[in-house]
Amino acid sequence: MMPSLRGMEAEPRIRVDVAETDQAYQIKADIPGVKKEDIKVAIDGNTVSIRAETKEEKEEKMEGNMMRKERHYGECYRSFALPQDVDESKAEAKYQDGVLSLTLPKKAGGSTKQITIQ
Image (cartoon, rainbow, N blue to C red; front, side, top):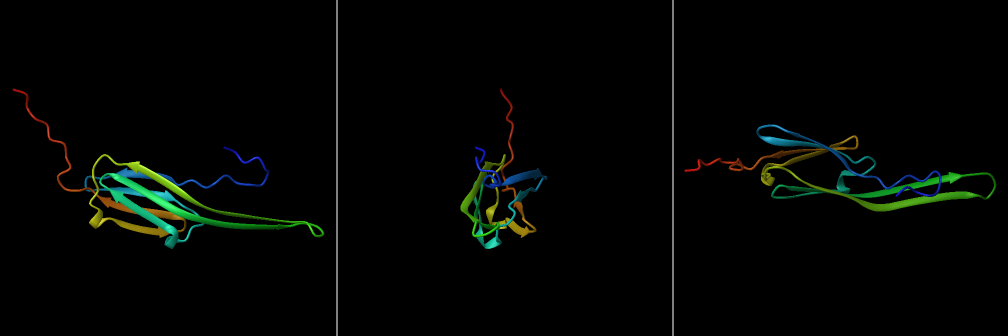
């Protein structure tokens, strides 16, 4: 949905890039304007969930006594499945300049085995 009032931004969304190597998944998630303490990452098998609490305050002063102050408090959430289970005990997360970087090692034994039909 688009906001109906001019000057209001839509609620932020978490955008992700996912890359895969033989050993791990590399994920970069854009979460600007959020403190790292307000970001939670959960791993359940091959499912990754990212949750961030957003707080934004804007104040616009106009002539005379007119003033507009807008506050936004909310939560962004993103969940997605990876092709293979993740070894959550070796997972690493870093947050810098509005970008959350995750290194999620693949769990051993998750490869597909083909069998011969007799």
